[in-house]
Length: 233
Image (cartoon, rainbow, N blue to C red; front, side, top):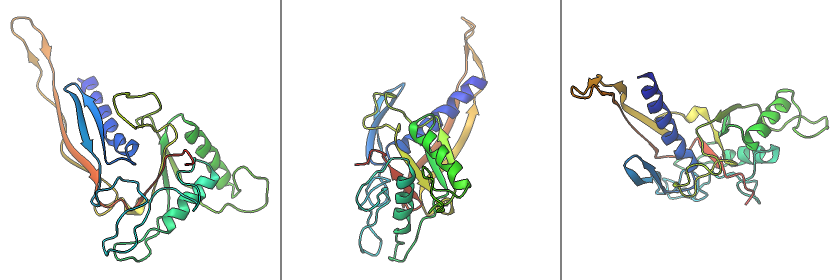
């Protein structure tokens, strides 16, 4: 029964992480034991979680939460890309057009990827107050962050039935001040994992076990989250 509970935990993590893998999409196709089905992942402005065209509630100029240094977008996970992530975060506007800068303090990557290893190396330099990859006496332009390397994000070649999802290079930045009901990704649980009573088939003595969980997830206002595909497009 413990394995059944662990299976539920794993499946829940996979579903929640697909939301990040699909951060540049408004819908995608996935599957379970019942077959293929479509998942809509657009937010309150009908756009993807990460977009350069998020609408503003006051009708003002659209805002972006896609990594960019002003010339190159979706920069890879390196020091220039990290500065670009901070740059985009500083430009975010609130619902009425007032500055609402993001302060990146968490970065999420696929465990075991080049992005994971490079950001781990960068953290070492930042903790020492040095510029990553340089021998200068200048200090770093950005501060340290928590690095979350998750095995549940998809990597290249995984889940071939899911179109356009790959996180071998994707990386995601979060301002944890906005992990609250108004902003960013949301998770609502109506039924925690519950193991049902064991049922034994009288004639065959087969033991049947089942489990149930119920939750919803998604986003309305994407403020607080910044993303990069990591391909320097």
